Image 1 (cartoon, rainbow, N blue to C red):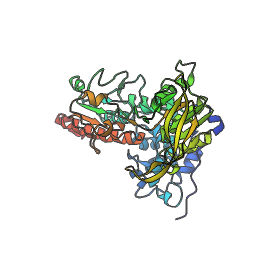
Image 2 (spheres, helix red, strand yellow; image 1 turned 180 degrees about the vertical axis):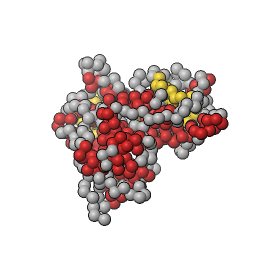
Image 3 (cartoon, helix red, strand yellow; image 1 turned 90 degrees about the vertical axis):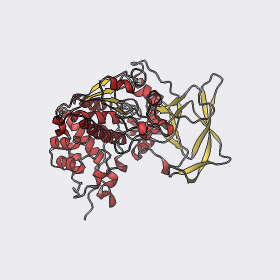
Image 4 (cartoon, rainbow, N blue to C red; image 1 turned 45 degrees about the vertical axis):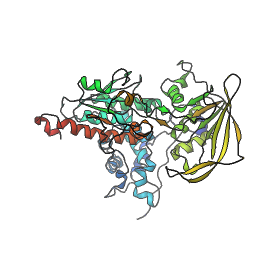
Length: 471
């Protein structure tokens, strides 16, 4: 079989320009580029790409329609399984999932599935979102706790199946990590709002400023008439390094930093009165996607020098390769095989430096990555006046602590069945980061989809026989 042409490159902003604005970095395919890329798909009889997708998107079908210029049916095929395609096309790690399974990747480069997904979703957005036909109303009420990717996906699927769905969101803006965690240069706010509006158009009600565990608890939801509850509360509790000086002024958790910038619009200061006092020299601890986001946001807020400090080598960096490349192009520096040991401060309690130690890689740890071990005599001080800690998060303990009978596991995660999301409580399901710990948007969506199917079966088993046709 002759090799297909190389994939179409994604047009992007110039690094020197984009490093100082919050506009989207990737500019998207033109119609001609999208069709040329879609033509690279060989339409396998056994599409392995689909098996790599946590939400089982009909990948060959939507790409074929796109190739043939039939965009309405491309949208229909894409959204038959994915309720948030414009988001997934931007932030889903396709390179390790569907694209990794593409047959073309064995001898060349895979089809750019994510970029085509984005193109189709954006085309629909430009034409006006079409609401699919919903199944007849079942009269069954479902409560969704959290409006992140897991909650939105579960809500949309259940609404399409005819159930009455209400999402309870703690913050004043829905979207969870999509709104407060991912910067607009990766995921524009209007894209997130459009996807949430689509979920609303299915009949889903979203109640903001509801802190489940305080405003209302899970048990009370059942007394209010809800027959099933899905917990998609994410993992927003930041972890810290546990080193001296971590409480100094100028030390942020990445969560706090990104919430201030994204949700509270600190990047528009002084138009919005939510300033972030970021220094001229910023150290970001960690090398995941959140760390890359924090580093790149710091540049855009005016930092002159931003350094990623990571205790392993480049081969172990967990961030998407695309984000690593973008960060480097924009001027972010990297101190690899380096671990912080102390945050240094002045007499007024402000950060003035970061004491570090070089590391070597030893034997693999439980994650399969080689464990970093201190390198004697390698201590040094990194000049910095701001430190952002991005080394991971865990679920907020509020709901587990306020809900009797809800079993939890390591680091406060909710114990739930992997295939259905069922928890230890009758009528309660959970999924996403609240169950797995911090993971990807698409894995949370997959969990929401599996839980929605299980909740539907549960509700229908309690529905009069006349509605049995919904099975």
